[in-house]
Image 1 (cartoon, helix red, strand yellow):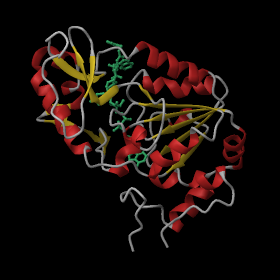
Image 2 (cartoon, rainbow, N blue to C red; image 1 turned 30 degrees about the vertical axis):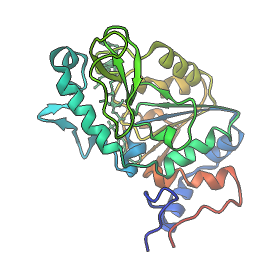
Image 3 (tube, rainbow, N blue to C red; image 1 turned 180 degrees about the vertical axis):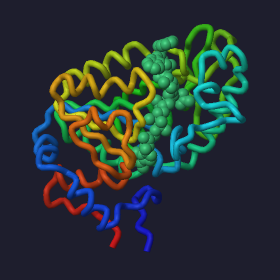
Length: 274
Ligand code: BV8
């Protein structure tokens, strides 16, 4: 019997998975989760995997588009060299995203913004699924696939789902590009400063679904740890960040995070598959 979430998508964790995850949560982590007042969550492509969004590095190889590694098609040079090809890559991914919904990991993270006194959600994802799950004030370190930016006047325009995106800037007529941070490009200064400040002032930091390869985002957990925060990784695989973490919860985010529903509201029934 398939147990659908209210979103009609990702499955809830089976009882067996829940028990194995519950066992992984140490008393130290449970105590810090219950006493934490300033919490930072950093997410990567893995948090959206159970929603059907392909990750960049899975199974040992990295994403390739029309023969080009994604670090190349998603690079500043490519915008100079062939902007239509860059648009084709992001239009393809946006079309994929149209029908995809947040999963229980996004849902649980969204609930944390009203549970912790100070809560900061930093994502490397451009898919907008955190916001779709109800997360507010998400720090999008790498921009959003749902926005375009003018290469001339830098005006930003929302790209509506199922809508056609304008090619030229309605304001100055110059060409538009995806409003995402490409390899070789600086992150939005304010966004990274806010993320680094939150990392330096948190007492609990979750690192969820990221391989920890892309910088400067991958440097945030170390900043949190250096400031005395307990750092907890959630990932089905070990990563370059695992040994920088105090706790590692091995599993899929959509199966691990719902466990915290019970932790933050004891007695709360965490629904699972029979
Ligand atoms: C910059 C938007 C200044 C576009 C992206 C220091 C050292 C080395 C290199 C550098 C460095 N500093 C800068 C660089 C260069 C570069 C970089 O880091 N290169 C890497 C490849 C080594 N960084 C930059 O260029 C950055 N800019 O530094 O500017 C500058 C300027 C000029 C020259 C030098 C410096 C800009 C980086 C941003 C690029 N844009 N995205 C797009 O989306 O196409 S990055 C993009 O890739 C994502 O946003 C994300 O950041 C990254 C992918 O990583 P993840 O999200 O972690 O995904 P991945 O697939 O790798 O891993 C998924 C994980 O999930 C896995 O661990 C898997 O096990 C796990 N998982 C799977 N299923 C689940 C799961 N986890 C939980 N649940 C599941 N169900």
